[in-house]
Image 1 (tube, one colour):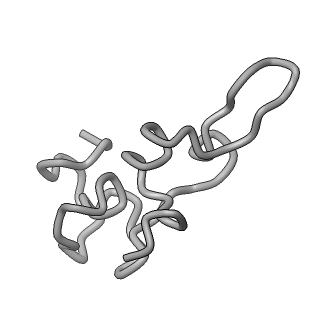
Image 2 (cartoon, rainbow, N blue to C red; image 1 turned 90 degrees about the vertical axis):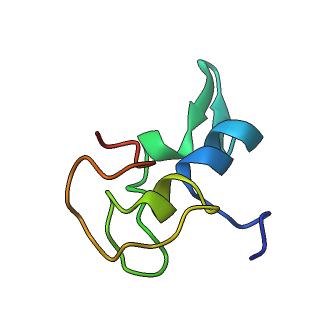
Image 3 (cartoon, one colour; image 1 turned 30 degrees about the horizontal axis):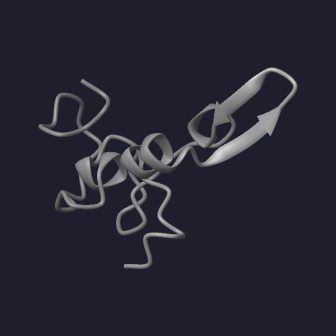
Length: 68
């Protein structure tokens, strides 16, 4: 995986991916829905952290997901 192009929640936070403007840094997740690149689900743990496996599920409460 090319981490320079990774848009998981973890990489957005760690690498400050997003927009810079007059109000400071705005994370990409504020302007774009972050989805798992494998299954397309927003609650999949892989959308939160590229090191976690894709579950193919959009169920809430998945371990590792930012959506608890």
